[in-house]
Image 1 (cartoon, one colour):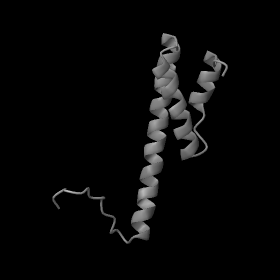
Image 2 (cartoon, one colour):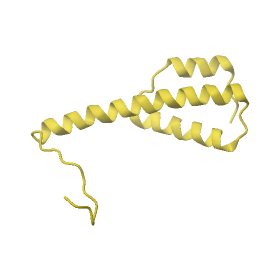
Image 3 (cartoon, one colour):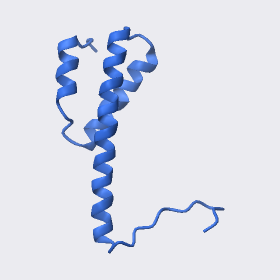
Image 4 (cartoon, helix red, strand yellow):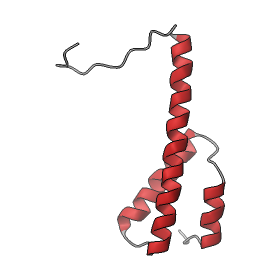
Length: 87
C-alpha cells in the first residue's frame, strides 16, 4: 500500500466517513499502521488525530442508533447484564 502524503492525510481528515462501517475500517487500518511502528513522527500524530475524529464520529453514530432503539422500544432500553452481576 502506498504511503499517503501530507496533502492526502489533510484531505482525509477534512472528509467525514461515508458511514459507520467505513469509519471503523479506516480506524482499524490506522491502528495497524501505528502499531507497526513504521510511521514517522509527523505521520503518527496525523494518524492519531484522524483516529480521534473517527472515534468521535463512531460514538455519535452509536448514540443516534441508541436513541432510535429507545424510541422503538418505548424508552424501555435496559443495559445488558452479565452473568453473576447483581441486579
